[in-house]
Picture 1 (cartoon, rainbow, N blue to C red):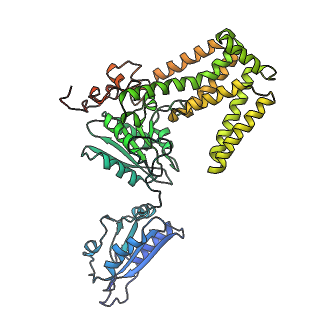
Picture 2 (picture 1 turned 180 degrees about the horizontal axis):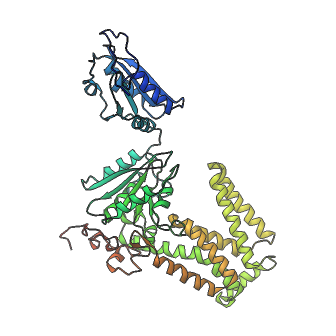
Picture 3 (picture 1 turned 30 degrees about the vertical axis):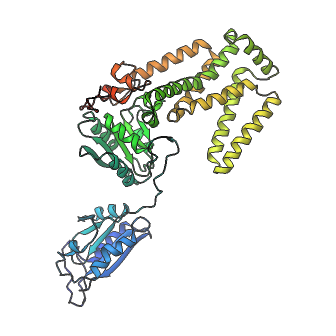
Length: 496
């Protein structure tokens, strides 16, 4: 296309139409691509008659900033035909020049404004992105009594600001990526240069770029992309909703992923022991933290195994139950029309239905539904002789135990069901075989070169100080050996 420049008089006379530099042609090209009615085109002139057009997406771009930083200074200026002074007149701190229409379309859809100038090739992309979003608040799943209360939001810039607020290091690297053929979702890959193991950020970047999908609405999609075995029952990357946890994992040698539109950040490599640790463990005494971690492990084991062991004891090994307790159970189950396995499955199904209904229903209705449903259905079922009291107690206690480690609930609820099936069909030997199979599987799984069961399998004695046992700060001078950090020392102190 030939380049034609509009010829105007000082007062803004007529202009030649046609050519790639013509404002009308540029707007025509944009409108052919962006046909949606919420794409706004605002045309105006400078004091000398120079024509401009700002194109932006209504609802994402800040119109007030557009008027104050772009339109107001240009309208009040006398601009020459060359337009060399335009960049100095624009008051926005985020200005980029572009030439291709595709770049303009991408920037407009991202929430910025494209400024086109009559008689000038290319355009200016003005950073006016201001999407709707919620304020920074405490996350619902990682609540702490002590420590920071800030949580990630759905805005990637806000989340990166929360990370930069805590890590004021020139070694912190943030690589911006994009995923989603239709959504073009922004993704920030964060790591500390010299601390993160060499090659891990590059591997994660390759995994993200290798997957083509229309829409990436949440970080769980990226989690599936970067997992070596996406169909595995066990996850292969960590999750967190608090910037303090995210920064702590970066400083240990992990890479972090923040996805625009998701309040949940990802970290890799991942170890199963991470989910038994809480942010509050590092803000309280090491003795208390060790006791709480041991309690979490015991609670998860009880939650997964207790229903299955109860079925095994009733069907195959009744002598495992103490005599006094056996008499209580016998009096409770007398007259129950179902076998122990069917009774336990029925009770579990009722609990899962109540749980799902309380989550999906409106907040206050869901709370009333869960309380009334649990009390009325449970009491009525026991009085009617359909379900025994021990079954309700065991299933309820099992559910409470599983939620002591909320990040593992998806996995542990599935494991509880598997153990129930095996216990009702094979018995105690089936439980032993299933446990051995799960342990062997976990021992063979890795997350970017780090075994999931580290630092227990393989055993890394130095890393046991912050596994299930929580040592004091001065005992953990080095970063975890399992993660293979290039900078091994994280605490330098003369204090013994």
